[in-house]
Image 1 (cartoon, helix red, strand yellow):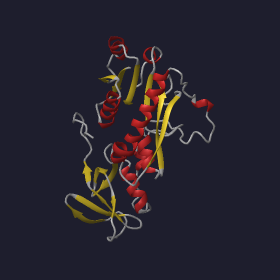
Image 2 (cartoon, helix red, strand yellow):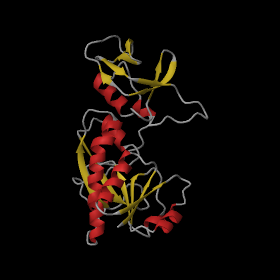
Image 3 (cartoon, helix red, strand yellow):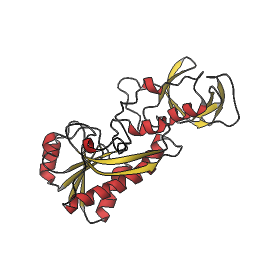
Length: 267
């Protein structure tokens, strides 16, 4: 099949999907999409049999998904909706998560299901989880969904027809800074580490330290040092160790707030 990948960036997942589909004999092309991209015009020009969106932050126009099959790769289990799925998986301490391949429609993440694959959630940061377990599940789900589309006989499953037991996820709001806030005097080390890891690349956890505002990225538990909750205990190779309610954590990166006009942080 002629398959057009549409993505916000040619990131590691998009590259893997591109390679895996090409290895299976499909003619694969890629279009990087922004809000200004005339996607309908792009699709008419490329005339694909199938559109797949491995990583897309913008909505697909109705004139595109109503004209030909358009599959959205959502990094959450069946029933999950929202733009912060992987963040929630880490912050909530989920043992298992998943990836769902959906038919694009008018409602974000609410389309019929072409494939779904579960995956474990190890104790790592959001970026590592996305590049490994989530990416592995996403590739498996995409290959399954593409094979089902190519068969011409498979019919995707409407989410409304699923039982409560089949919907292991649920709609969740964006994980904003208010929900990421750390209470250094009350939160135990495990909670602090999960909160930091859920924001390890973007957006970071907004916090006040030594009278200034910083964004904290990444977190690792400290085995020995303790102190008054919130107190700075040590530094090492640019990282800081800060006391929690029942121990301490190492924070490898602190970033000052971005000033207007400054380029955004990559990653």
